[in-house]
Amino acid sequence: MKIIFTFQPKEEFVSDLKNSFPEVGFLFYKKIKEAENELPNAEVIVTMGEDLTDDHIEKSANCRWIMVTSAGLEKMPFEAIKKRGILVTNARGIHKIPMAEFTIGLMLQYAKQLQSVWKQESDNVWSRRLPTSELHQASLLILGAGAIGGEIARLAKAFHMRVVGVNSSGSPVEHFDSMFTLETFTEQLPHADFIVSVLPSTAKTKHLLKVEHFEQMKDTAVFINIGRGDLAEESVLLEASGKKLIGHMYLDVFEKEPLPKGHPFWLNKGITVTPHLSSITKKYMPRALDIFKKNLTTYSKKSEGYINVIDAERGY
Amino acid sequence: MKIIFTFQPKEEFVSDLKNSFPEVGFLFYKKIKEAENELPNAEVIVTMGEDLTDDHIEKSANCRWIMVTSAGLEKMPFEAIKKRGILVTNARGIHKIPMAEFTIGLMLQYAKQLQSVWKQESDNVWSRRLPTSELHQASLLILGAGAIGGEIARLAKAFHMRVVGVNSSGSPVEHFDSMFTLETFTEQLPHADFIVSVLPSTAKTKHLLKVEHFEQMKDTAVFINIGRGDLAEESVLLEASGKKLIGHMYLDVFEKEPLPKGHPFWLNKGITVTPHLSSITKKYMPRALDIFKKNLTTYSKKSEGYINVIDAERGY
Image (cartoon, rainbow over all chains, first blue to last red; front, side, top):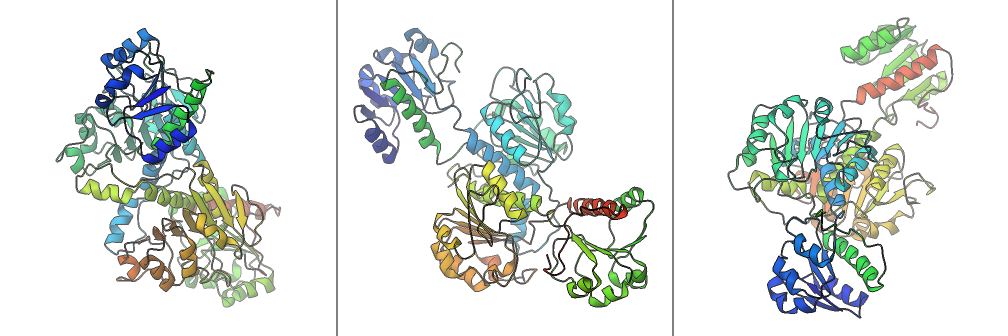
């Protein structure tokens, strides 16, 4: 069996795979272009998910399984895949740990006013008069209650926060005290100390947040967006910040990334820009390949119970 | 019944106390000196714990209960109190929430390299190449496994850390995976990613940590001291940092506070100074007075079950 990687993992992962599956012929290419001649022989393709085209699927006449080592599937040629009945699995779920830690880290750093503490420290100033607060019994509204939102909620409950969530159905989710929908969540805005969005970009979520939503929030509220950059128009975020409608914004995602030099977000005191950091972790590849290895064992045994099977019809 | 406060709480607390206990005559003084004439009439004295002397105890001939609205008891005249058999209670336990949040906040801000992120942000630099890590499955060694250490451990377990603790007996404590004593903990030093001390100052803990202990730690380890400043001599901390024996130190407590201007700790890149912030919270006084009110109800009813009774013999 030949398995083609359309990216080059580090040597430690390569040798781990070869040792774990000595019967498999692994072929590693830096990019799909270099792999094209071997595609017809590949039984399995492992990809980061942004390089496959209809043409590649057609060439891969013997392909029976595509493993996507990310969670993003927007660029996958699902029409061609569906016709051929190729199994698709991805690395869904591996983002939740770094993203939840990042979110709690931002909330704590705001509550403990650590940016001011580091400023004081660099000035050698000993001052204990900082408006610090606690996560304890503060209210958290999470837009998006999937794997990532659920992990944020689980940690927030450990800090004894009140946690309200938003999903499409409004039905109960573990670790959330109560749930609302995209149609009903606005009534929760006046109660939240922290509002975190992990929403994906869909027709319903694009430019969902308007200035009127920020007007309903507490003037001390902290808004954190680690979902998608098109949740609110840039002009909305700038107006909300300019009018000091809330306490602070942490923006990790943007309509255009990287955020250009000189963009007003960089310069606005009420906005902290982070460069799409929330999911970055050294453990990304080990976790993605761990899912791949488990699925490869299932595949080799012609067994059942694949992790993260994607429905090519729905695209997720 | 007359109750004397040797400090002046904010008006909201004063009116809450008067409304809750209309039968009590509360007298509030800014300092004990102003209260001296009334001491002989006081049945209860409420103090921050640093102002009472043998002389005051002698004057307070009718005093039957002293409520200390802090956790520190080092300056209490326990000999005189013991002779008179006066009940002493304190506000032990109210520090655990802010101190545990502060500690997890520091660990996350280190793991996510947030100090570098804010530097990049102020320079308008979009760079995702930061050596970030996770708390997930990292190892935490907590010196001191009382209320504060236990709360840090509880939160650390929510982050799926491995948590090892140190107490005087080495016997099991909830939320800790395993326990060691001050005599046996050094074997754990090579395994810890984070070492947090919440130890009090005692004959056994004073200058406990030597350079050889830092030599045994991982060169990536992070040391956080929120306990007492005399856990290690300043020269030890400076040598450990100067030799880059570990990754970073966060020092919140010092042998002399405030830390003087120009002190090498301020200037050392491997040391971050925070001005004894860990327990600071807006909720301090509400929590301390909540304990006082519960105990006052017990006292008024001549009932039993006081919260936080201090053994005047042992001093804690």
